[in-house]
Amino acid sequence: MRRVVVKVGSNVLTQAGGKLNVTRVSALVDQIAWMRHHGFEVILVTSGAVACGRRELLIDHELDSVEQRQLYSAVGQVKLVNLYYDLFREYGMHVGQVLTMKENFQTEEQYQNQRACMEVMLQNGVIPVVNENDTVCVTELMFTDNDELSGLIAKMMKAEMLILLSNIDGVFTGDPADPASELIRSVKPGDDVAQYIQAKKSSAGRGGMTSKFNTASSLSKEGVRVIIANGERENILVDLINNPKDTPHTEFIAS
Ligand code: GLU
Image 1 (cartoon, helix red, strand yellow):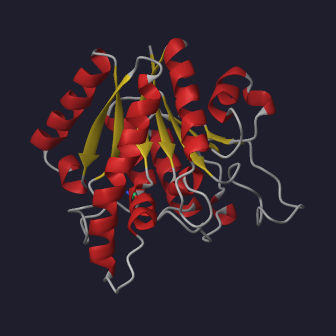
Image 2 (cartoon, rainbow, N blue to C red):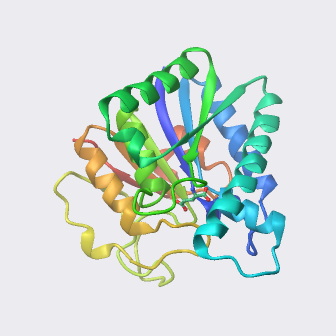
């Protein structure tokens, strides 16, 4: 089986205004189920807890940023995982929740425990649905974002590929909104594309192209292929596998 980590960003999962995009989540689940039927073992790293919870509660009084993150993620994570649970169930597939934090990657014992947990899930046909434990990770111990987290998971689980789904087709030679900018299809080890990385980021999540680029560069050195693609495109995962040539994306080729 080919092991792949798929990371889905908050912007892919939510509509403008933060409402959970159930149709999109459902389409992604259909595609992950397709992957499972085509010889792939998938680990799903999903953002969206905070965005989901914010929309669910619509609090009308002041909360500081830590309170917001704790409250919204606690509520939103349940909603998010429930949705994955129900949708995968239609395919007779089981999901299991893994909430993690930076500390879990720092000591050998915790690292191995975490790895063993996901390994036993995969061995028993359970799809790990991973997110940061946002309720308790609130300070300097947070991951930069789920791009960093998905990179650590891909490395730990020795995945052959990490697919980062965002709301952009990949790395462009300039501002993606400028029609003169071109999509960079592949980045080989040693290629200097840092100059093209736009610091600008989209609204809902914490990530952005800078962190995707950092994750991709370091992982490709570890022998993991990294693909950045647009999760808002219909059938993106299936197309990346079946017809990569005609599917917009940026691939960081593993060394
Ligand atoms: N863990 C956060 C959430 O689920 C998102 C972090 C990120 O945007 O990368 O809401």
